[in-house]
Length: 527
Image 1 (tube, helix red, strand yellow):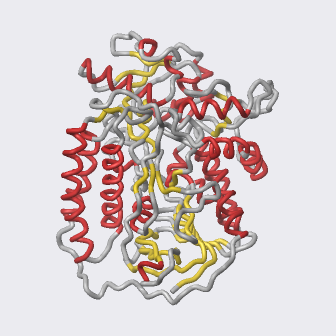
Image 2 (cartoon, helix red, strand yellow):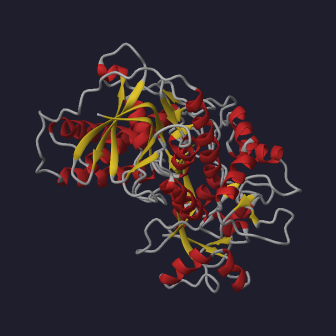
Image 3 (cartoon, rainbow, N blue to C red):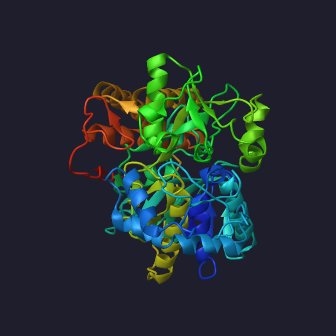
């Protein structure tokens, strides 16, 4: 049994922010299933939404967020995040994150505009903001003597009072698999923080890295925590369409700087879907692209910014330019072939404004959580901001909380399982799950497709749980088990919402109901 003050599961911006705000006061252990830089945060291109310019206001940022969220945002969460946004980015300034400067601006930084924003307020580091922020924070974390980093370790399941047979609703840490030697280790902590990111890999096409397998949501739900609004999966409108391009996102900032969506014949189409055209929120743009592709039988549409000056394009989007060029696409001269792809999970583990879940001692921050900030559709560049604000809030709450004695925790028992010689089942079920989610639970849904998905996923769940009970755990088994659980939560939530709102579009319920209500699924307690 290994003990720490705070156990943080994940290594994206939410995890690193929480760890760095705690490490001067407590012993922190960070668990990440690959390396420290493997996270969706590192892939973020656009930037961080915050009010810096004189011609912008916090109230405008609040209203833009509420409008994008289609009535489901929790206004207290929105105002809390926007209020603390300036302090959050100033912390990054002090750490030395190299944001793109603009000497002619009253802020000193270049600010861009993205869909759904009424002003230029996106602070960025060229077109690789996440990578720049992650690199800076990773360097700080590696230097801190109070932070223990466990790379190549995947969280298996939370240790709870119910699991131990105790009459307390509390989390005491987590069982963790060291994937280098396939040994399960026991980590006990006064405070456990889920910062595991989203679940994009539940879909066949996604902009997310391979680590985005819904681990935190699945573990928290099995531990008894409520999850909310899992039906709202954001599909990014513009993912590079090329047979050799894996999950490469074309930043929303390309449209913010004048990029135009076009059909293969060069004609435009966004104006007939929304007056804001290319600057409409992501859900509207993604549905418009999906509609045009289905109606015309297209494999993709095109995003064209070649009418802008070539120097402007290569200086503002150097990484996108180079990546597209590596596939033979010169974006200064020709349009970019794009398709929508699963991008962000707006729902998650229910938390309060301090990042606390319903389980004492357990916190959730970032994409894994449901804070109420995003509602039915996340406003562009609010995700990194949420990580910063809630990471800091959770750290403050942890420091202020009382420490309770920890019980003796039993080691992981694998004496009744054996090694598997049937690993083909994992690969097959992984592929089947992602394909049926893409086909049946995508951008536009129907009752029939959701019912078919629910039946097939129930069979997959039964197979996976049987496999889990009989064979030794592995990284692939843990991820598949979590993906299946997350898929069930998404489908069940979608079936419960009998309307179309934000990211959830139903052919059977095209109208939006007058009352905006969250979809809450109570946790499954698994002792």
